[in-house]
Length: 77
Image: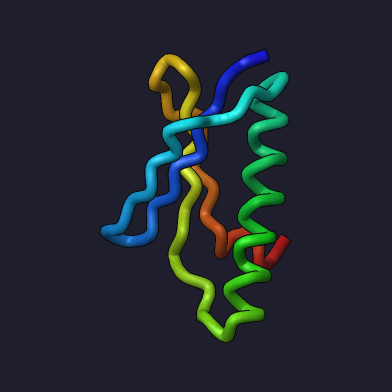
């Protein structure tokens, strides 16, 4: 198991994930990020809020940025 952190950046705003989560691999981290982003967008839309420019920045336990996932990119996939 590896430990991953899912920070959220939205323009100048930054929300740090200080707990993280244990997952088997970075592939699982990508799937987790996609699922979480979709759920967050559903909540935003249901609340009448626009889908913003939120981005997951996924880091490993060594402080390495593994990937970024733009929420808006999921609207067309």
